[in-house]
Length: 558
Image 1 (cartoon, rainbow, N blue to C red):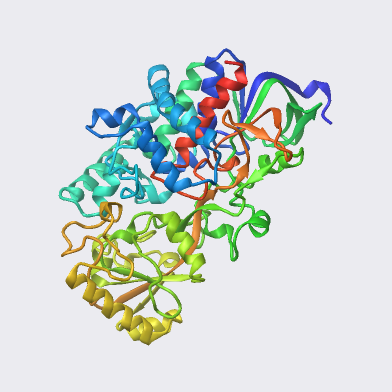
Image 2: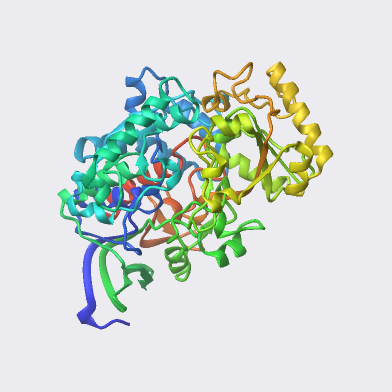
């Protein structure tokens, strides 16, 4: 054990720096606790900072400001359909009750600001589902609110930017993806603004206009700077100190030395899941499984999860993840997730037999499940020259912006390309007759506007990211213009979903069901309050922040 010269003390220790962890730190501080935050890596923000940053908050006040309609009863009904009995009702009730309070508190007491989006629930036709405004987007901000701390903010994932560096909002991203009127002018304006910001380009070529998850984390971090709450980077947790049925501290490592942190009130674990730990993936997740398919933070290797399991903590949903179809680009540390591109008209996803096996426009969790259920790993997304010219797709910019001969070789090498469907099938190792039949059926469905096989384009969610200018169905168009393209798609994820089982106050439970006093878990370190479902955009970060809010207050004794 470390010697006493290396001891630190605090009331509440928060492990991790995603949006949930930072919210927990704010809540604990404001409830009167002395708070310390520790982060494993040399940058703060976790997966939250690299993400779209949306939070799913039923019955939030911004929803009503936008003319939306919601109620606690509707939210409960929808969660009952989506989650079923996979999660205790008291945890669900705590989330639905406290989530809107958390948002109000942050807006009243911190620099966090949100706007309701017309983004629909992922299953709006289900009982209690809504066609918009339960998802909140963080308002953009400028890096100046962080001062020198901007240099330590984890940058966004390339796929939530333009050209890998220009930050965009969810609204701007949708406009450009679906080729909405004025989207090209919008893209030009954003690029011009970036290139005119010479200090930003000199400072690591980073956009100082922060949006999405970057804006969310920046606003929360700035609020903690206002409160003078210390944050230690490059300080991984190595073990929990457990004495007489209570967690009383933790051991971290700094500069090769171990230091003990004595904790008077509680430790809150909010350090993400285990998606980048191949051994844990092999142990718990369906096979095949690869850390190369995830878009999660590369530092999410389940360290805090294992530390809690070592003292007898109970886990749940360990075989589940926030599944999403993904494309792995050689040289990139995280995969590209096909969040919305699959809804665009003019592509199909097939198995080795050349056959479709699901609705391509499905919410991404269901698309991941479908790949495993159909035993279609990898799958192949097929599209034609028209689609390639018009739309972005994963790491591909539209050919109208970046033609094939301008693609970097590592991306170009991902593409199968041919002048006929049969030749494309041969190159992909897919049955040619099956693929030809699938393309012919797709083209018939484009003409009629209906997909009798998988109802693609029927749901309001499907249509949200479709192209409203495309024929009779915004999600279906003919695939007929050579050259034809194919690309491998894997059952990736944006993080693991299983973790430490907690109660309604985010306290970690032991194997016998009792509470481990002094230990809390939130976000992907805990098992999800959403069970095996994904009700709407922001169902990861929304609960992380809500239970961070709950845990912070509870740990501080408020």
